[in-house]
Amino acid sequence: MSNPVVASTYPDGQPYQPARGRYAPRTRVEDYMQPSASVVQGRPDADEFVRLIIREMRIRFYQPKTVKPYRSHLVSLLRWFGAPAHRLTREDVREYLLYLVDGGASSSTVSNHLSAIRTAFDKMCLRQVTLGLMVPRKPKRLPVILSPEEIMALLHAAPSLRDKLLLGLMYATGMRVSEVVRVRWRDLDFDRRLINVWQGKGRTDRQVTLPICFESLLRTLSTDRGGDDFVFPSENNTRRGRHLSPRTAQRVMERAVRIAGIKKKATPHSLRHSFATHSFENGCDIRRIQKLMGHVKLETTTIYVKVAKPTDDLAAPSPLDTLYHVPRRDSAPQRKRVDVGQLRIHFLQQPTEANCRRAKVTISVSSGERPIYLTGIMAKEVRPGYVTLDIPPLESWAEPLSWLSRQQRDRFEEPEFYEMLQREISQRLCQLPHDLTTPSST
Image 1 (cartoon, rainbow, N blue to C red):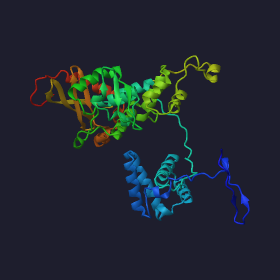
Image 2: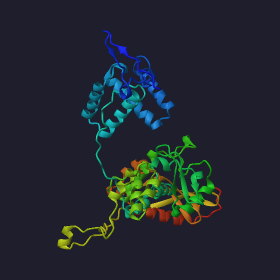
Image 3: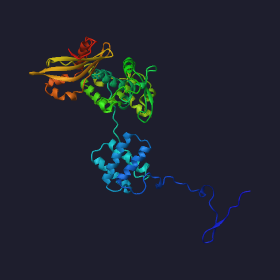
């Protein structure tokens, strides 16, 4: 038996029946998104507001590379606003973004500022000052892809073994520059031919393929070092136990691109793009490439399908070539070599280490009445018959190179010059005796 409906009356005494079913009054829902849940309470000044936001970001384990620019963006906003943070409105945010655009900021810069404001005010303070503001449109650009011939020229242009190994691993594995400089010897799995990448972009782990051509060299180098040592340690003696900085790796790439004569705006990330594109052209599955690259979304990987070179049966010739039957030029004409002077190589042999020869090398170039000396080159025989060169960057030779002629300076930027230097120094170093206790000049 159902319960009887209790009649109610209006204030004037007229009866009415309470709403039932879908129109019945509902239990009040508790709102947890109240201002009391904000990480910033009260009305703090600008410095205190930024401090509280940075503290919350560190508690939530935001990456340091995210915390630093976000702090800079918030300080810039509050300095422009000139008032306490609790007075900021949605219209103020729009005016600030317009101020950045008028100042010549790119769409990426405006997006980063908007993300910092949305994180601080909307996510952490529940203010909703960016509600309705869309991320600015970004230009869609194709990645810079190096051809296989340019990759080989790039590796030949790297003067030292470390530089060849650094650039070669970035191309062979598709790792980011920030990931390859953090690889330790314990991360190399020679039995399974894998390299473990720990906590890459997005705090994710993945595995990439260890190239066969570098396996024997890495095995040899890993015997001298091991465990927690980095494959690419820092060049700074005051920072022992640290890895090579990504900026140094970028300078290595810039130098190799300049020496190889590559006109494209190639960066270390171009080697990652080239790895994905060449893998797809060689028949690798797009899902496999996505896994090796560490992409979360497949749409990020499918861009390499657009830039991949079509197969021969799909490549249509240009209509103009069909009309005129113009043959394709495969190679550019060789530049005539001009004699620019005499070069001498001087050796100062060092005490041997583990039965491997070492020597300091100095180059003298004839220029006018007196020769110009270029120092700082170290040659080392890492294993019998295999010599590596550690050549300082051209910036350290800026003063002596300024005394040379234009043609002589151009010769130092040609890959053939470093190939000749590698060949001559290797031949002479292998002829030096092993049993040496004191340095000697040759």
